[in-house]
Image 1 (cartoon, one colour):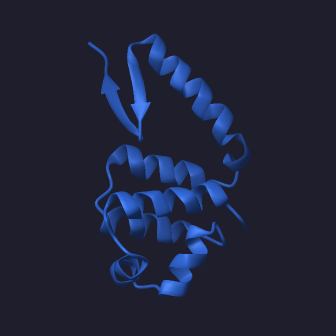
Image 2: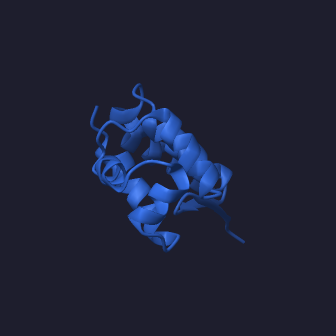
Length: 105
């Protein structure tokens, strides 16, 4: 199954962490070609998301976001849910910046 948004998010996290695809391959035990396919959003297994989150020591928010994005039930509704979540958080004085919660003073 194709999930381009999840693939782009994996690539974005990798780049933010300053890692190459080969680094991710070594950390997760899959080939560089497989990492390339995952970053294209192709056939990303849930087991890889868990390994990726653990090996890169992602925050709880980042891990939850990846799990959510990988859920086949919510893939099509992600943008709509994210829009409403941002609106609700703004109502209580928070906003999401790169999946981190930031309080407004």
